[in-house]
Amino acid sequence: MTAPTVPADATEAGPARMSRREVLQALSGLMVGMFVSILASTVVANALPRIIADLHGSQTVYTWIVTTELLAMTATVPLWGKMADLYSKKLLIQLSLGLFVVGSLIAGFTPNVEILLVSRIVQGVGAGGMTALATIVMAAMIPPRELGRYAGIFGAVFGVGTIAGPLIGGVLVDTSWLGWRWCFLIGVPFTLLSIFLLQRTLHLPVVRREVKIDWLGAALITTGVSLLLVWSSLAGNKFAWASGWTALMVAGGVALLAVAVFVESRAAEPIIPLDIFRNRTVSLATVASVLVGVAMFGGTVFLSQYFQISLGKSPTVAGLMSLPMILGLLVSSTVAGQLITKYGRWKMFLVTGGAIMTAGMVLLGTIDARTSVVVLGIYMAVLGIGVGMLMQNLVLAAQNDVPAHELGAATSVLTFFRSMGGAIGVSALGAVLANRITDLMTEKLGPAAAGGGSSAAVPDLSTLPAPVLRIVQDVYGSATAELFLLGAPLALLAMVVVLFIREKPLHTLSGDQRRAQEEAARTASLSH
Image (cartoon, rainbow, N blue to C red; front, side, top):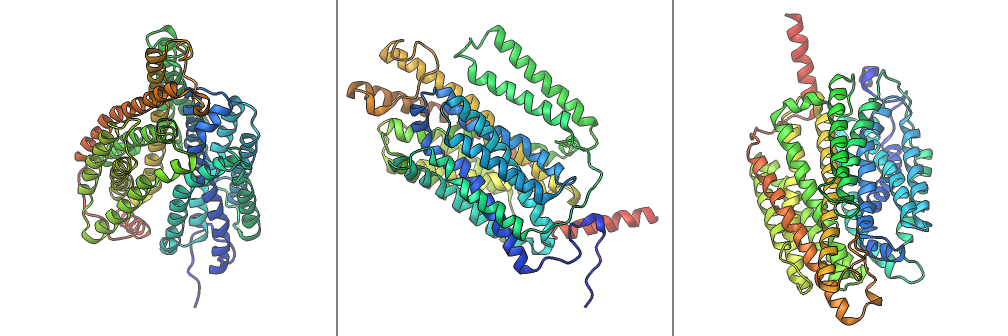
């Protein structure tokens, strides 16, 4: 039986296709790398209050420890993807893992919050490479018709990393002979193992293509968004909201993004292809993804701080308390996916998910320092169920409505904007939280106890007298609840946006089969 011939420009296959055993061996390295990159985002969640207290950081720094990694990862995903068309995928993925190791080591031994923020940027760049290149390497190794069976393995790795991260982080912080620094250092041996496995098992030839990387567009987008994020973190603390600095930073950020749109519209291979937004479904799904990112990341990233400061829980218990939301998300996304496959209808899940997510945000807007763990778990599960029904199915709606050759662009655009919405949400709502905590502390304890009106320092509860401790817990409970009340209208707006998405029957052919159909139709039209 002869092997099928495949055009050289359409494949990454070498002289001999990798055997199933070789594929599984190479996947082991990819899975370890993916697990570590997911862990980097989740393991630190329950350690942040302790880290900030030990390094004498502020509430604004708390926000930026999350935002810097998320922004660096988001901004570099398209760049790693472009470079994969020019250089060795094996070399690039090992480079991204190496950057992750460097960032983790710097973070693990950091003497202050400034160096910690730099290390998080390095970690984010490495995680962005791993996120982008894992999918590309899989497509290079595995024929499209067989990708499904392997994709499930990566889904399981994502689920385990998401759930295990907060628990591992909590245990590390509560273990006296380890401590929070191991939240960063624990990933180093696993990352080195991933590099070793990929070096031994991944064998892909380098196929160079004529691809231009839009460095200018990437720089403009990243700088413009970063400037607006910095403004949202500093306004109200370092300078007034209505001030010359506000006007300068907002105008500068908007101007940079406007120039970025101009550059992207003329780039041969833009970081964000603007033509794709002519598709109504993609445009609406993108807007909804940004809103979901702002509401979900912006509200939930501060829950761990609420558990530990307002409720007085240990980092380990805080990790356990996050399980209802994660499990709600995983179960609802899985069940909704199966029902969509069975009945072929998807819009009702988007609308229902938006409604449930809004309800979850409103319910969490009622929490305080005396909310019971059971009630809190129910509220979080409601939010998780809504997000699970909405988040992945927005991608499905967009993928179903674009030509096969635009599947990758549509998917990357939605992922990019959802992550960017998350970074904006963490930064903006974090600034609101810091300002609100400062105001409430000033009101209840006086300016001196609140830090003189500056960004409130995250307190070390063990050093506070009982009366002050109670006030601090009430302040953090009230301020966190207000964040969810601010996020609720965004969740409601996301539901309104998806109402305008037209439901179209789901394609019964794979992307590969659809592409073949499109090519045949194009050839037939040219012949006539």
